[in-house]
Image (cartoon, rainbow, N blue to C red):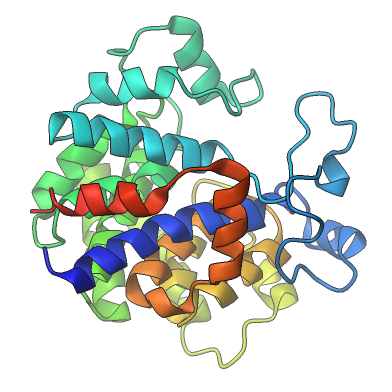
Length: 324
């Protein structure tokens, strides 16, 4: 593995975690809610690292901290550890790693809650169409080069089915993994979108047994909607593509990862839109980190590392040795 590819892989993982932590500050808020909490907009970490994010002070379930990553990063790291142990993607190994994850394991996140309640690492579900499988799919894209589409789609299914088995979830995860992989390979933005559509359509057809390509069409529509815009104001994007459903969250994330040229800018845009902002920022950050590693904000990553201690540089370098 050449140094350039390794740098892209490390940057993709940094993009996952940085986008996750920045985006968490506004997760579930409407665009109006983002403006109420952050009248000047989200400009980075709004508060002292390690202190509780203001809107989560006194939160009954969990007080998220400034700079803290969520289950999106925790589960991404779980998939990476399973791959490093096996040299491959096996759902029972991914399941074992997911069972030791603790974040967002509550009835409000049914996919993770049901999996942890079952307590079976080899569990396979046919349910759930959320984006939880997509946000942890980057290590699959790191393992395989983007020309190995069949292997990526099959591996994504293995990484997804402990918690997510719906056709849209598998399509979103396949699109994310191959988009990250193509970005690592140095593909152009149009090439990344094209291969992501193909992967999504293949995964959805295999799961549904038909010719459906619902997710791929949603991805193309999102990309067409925002492609060529000279500016992407949060108000405008929120009206056109608000990320609050299975057919808007990952399509917007991949769109931002391909129509924008800066990981930092895409992460801030996602945070200022609201909705499932941490997932959008995480996926967009992974793609743009791989495309343009120099556009990641090093100071943000230093905060993430200080608060969480993930050591994503070592993780990325270890994964890079397996890429094939």
